[in-house]
Amino acid sequence: MAALYNNGLNGNPHFLVEGGRPLRGVFKVPGAKNAALPIIAGTILAPGRLTLGRVPDISDVRVMLELLNHMGAEIELDDNGILSIDTTALKSVPAPYSLVKKLNASFDITGALVARFGEAMVPMPGGCVIGTRAVDQHLMGFRLLGCDVRSEPGGFVAVKASGLVGNRIRFAKTSVGATKNVMMAACMARGRTVLENVAREPEVVDLANFLAACGASINGQGSSRIEISGVRGMSGAGVRYNIISDRLVAGTYLLAAAITRGEITATGVEPEHLKAFIRKLRKTGQDLTVGEDFIHLRGVSPILSAGAVIAEPYPAFPTDLQPPMVAYLSLAQGVSYVKEKIFDMRFNYVDDLRRMGANIEVDSNTAVVRGVERLMGAPIDAPDIRAGAALVLAALAAEGTSQVHGLHFIDRGYEKMEERLSALGASIRRVAGDADRH
Ligand code: EPZ
Image 1 (spheres, helix red, strand yellow):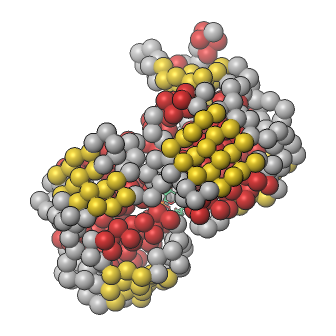
Image 2: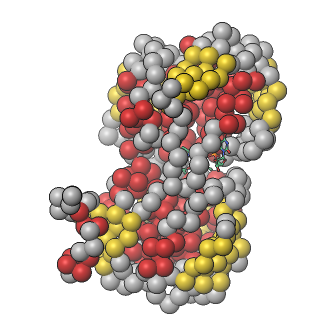
Image 3: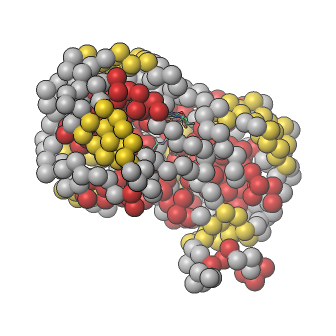
């Protein structure tokens, strides 16, 4: 059968998926990638040995830890997601491009470095397939706190301040990254800082709560206005902090159960963080039981149209569940309209779904998804983390065999995805693939 896929794609590691098997069982939701990354950056502000619980075992976290280790942090990560870290010996050395290019979120160390050391030299984040990753709001916030910001040769940006001073900062655009970065820069600025039009995502709230546990004075996290009173110093000594669960991984696995007409219980989840998503899943006919820290889904046929799904800032439907939702809706009865209002190129995976038989038309930032009876397995290629998850979901529901390439993206955001899915009854395995063709 493998010969059928001799399309040049099979020269690298991929998932081999046999579709049509309903997922059943219990899935323990890991810690949130988008909280763990800024919180690890936030340890730069708080010297002293601290412990973080529920750190997800994903490559993005490993890159961020490698970056901090390169700068002098002492790090121990055990097999249970317990991270012990001490940034006492950290130095503000230029972040190596080889690491930053792998991880846009590594730009989030800038605010913490300039707060602790008065300077940071960080490569500008690379672009990525879901759209330009502008940082103008980050830099605007740093300038208003008294930083001198200038471009340096080699695509670096130097942020320097002889002393950060609190200010009123209104973001022109709601940005998760800018909110996190500028909030960290303001923690030890002299006086009071008011941030307006900030991101309200649970991961931003988690970062603020972690910083407060290390001595920062922050109020308003979760609303669109955060107030910070600068403190003279922060310390991580003896701090133990558990990272929130990953609402995006939880949503992905619930959709995997729904698309395969299975039945799973996602445990260790915070349903409060998924209200818009749960509403939409119920609208498509799924039978959901929501407890305090679990969500049980019993897959129901047929999948009904979701009507309009609009991906926009929290607490609306999350952009990171847009691709898996489109894969799920491709098997719905009727038409769904999925609008992406955050990133400008986030339908890059639709071509591969079409090759599997989906009927999806993309017009600027809206995908018109006309449900079809079935999808057919095919060789497919993940262009980013959440698109990769979408393609895996389609492969799980398709008739026949699929090869899913682009595992380096999937591994950035999903812990051992093939093991977790196999434990729920999926037929999926990681295949090394023969040597790369030249
Ligand atoms: C975070 O990215 C998440 N990543 C993304 O998750 C998520 O999709 C995104 O927030 C939106 O929720 C992490 O937390 C590590 P933004 P971030 O700054 O911070 C524009 C995943 O798969 N913008 O809110 O980069 C920007 O270009 C990833 O887990 C500016 O114009 O998102 C984008 O179009 C994908 N100027 C939009 O705002 C700026 O200064 C949202 O960006 C900053 C952003």
